[in-house]
Length: 106
Image 1 (tube, one colour):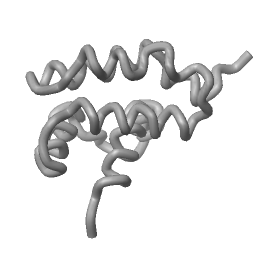
Image 2 (cartoon, one colour):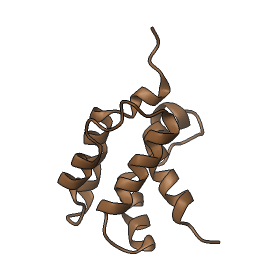
Image 3 (tube, one colour):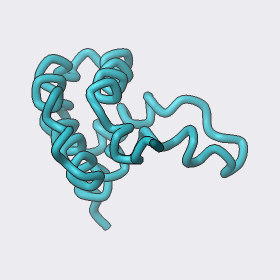
Image 4 (tube, helix red, strand yellow):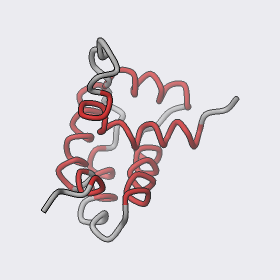
């Protein structure tokens, strides 16, 4: 059976994302982030998982919106040379994009 897209956003994903944030900023509340999400995503569909992770990011990454953007930028890595790979290599960014969507101002 093919893995559903929502199932990529699981406890292993949460640990991976926490490690990325912890590597670039000492203010990220790794333990609280993991407690908020570990074993909490299984019953949620895709949008619910993305929203829950985005909320946990907001709650556990102190700072202003602009300061958070700087941290988000720090975890991105090298830009893709082309749009090829946008979905195969950029899928993990969805909760970060959702956070930006919820907090950006025009």
